[in-house]
Amino acid sequence: MAVPINQVIAFSAVARTGSFAEAAVGLHLSQPALSIAIKNLEESLGGKLFARTTRSVTLTPEGKAFYPVARRLLSDWEQSLQDVRNHFSLRRGKLDIAAMPTYTINLLPKILASFHRQYPNINVTVHDVIAESVVEMVREHRCELGVTFDPDDSPDLTFQPLFIDRFIAILPSQHPLLRKRSLRWRDLLDYPHISLQKPAGTRARIDQSLAKESLRITPAFESHQLVSIGRMVREGLGLSVVPSTSRAQMKEMGLECRAIAFPVITHRLGVITRRQQTLSAAAQAMASLIRQMSPKKNEP
Image 1 (cartoon, rainbow, N blue to C red):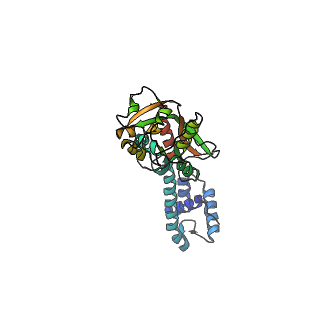
Image 2: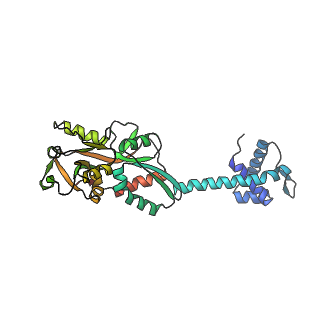
Image 3: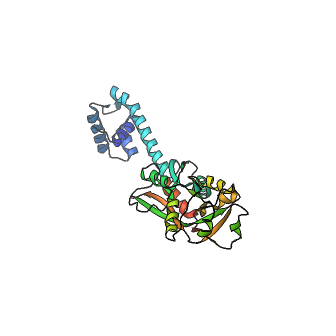
């Protein structure tokens, strides 16, 4: 039979004070209510815990054996309550988030720094994975939230848009196309192209948009990682197109970034969570900070 915690509290108070009257005052209970709690506890355990006379209240041998157990139970109970309070007040906790490399490298570090200043005792694990894996990790309950492109046709997920990102061209310095005032996709396709590998969502979006203009990419090289693509472009192996969120990263490699006039290809980037999921206090704080610190748009 389950024993309510209030009965253990009542027993501990009487055992500590040696008085039903004093214990009742301390617990803000009437003496009859306290006596009923002790009686119910004794019935649940199968015997007397107190030897009572008109002048004194003492513990029976069984009561003496139970008293340290009761104190340990109450201590564990209070610690458990405090742990939950700490999670709600963000004084303790753990958070797993997933995000695309372009976001984790270029935008997330400042957000994490701000989060850590506000909540230094929250341990955050960042899963730096491709867009499709972000969706999988949130969907499979491995992460509470993710930052990725809009996962179309995903009724089990909620998508909160942050900004619209635009694909830009990256070129090595001194490339002939840099002399053009305006770049078009047709200009880029005259040169060897370095592309993200299928089935990357960004690659699919580019292919679909170009097909509407009767254009097609035939990659000379492919990679899953944008940093690898950037280095290949730097070595003169070809040109590429990347999300504008990676602009700073590409410039650090010494590459030139240019807008593409036609067709302009964009995609929405935002926070995804499981639909009808109640986020932890830490996840709510992180999602709020991501929204506050994200640009309204991210275009060249």
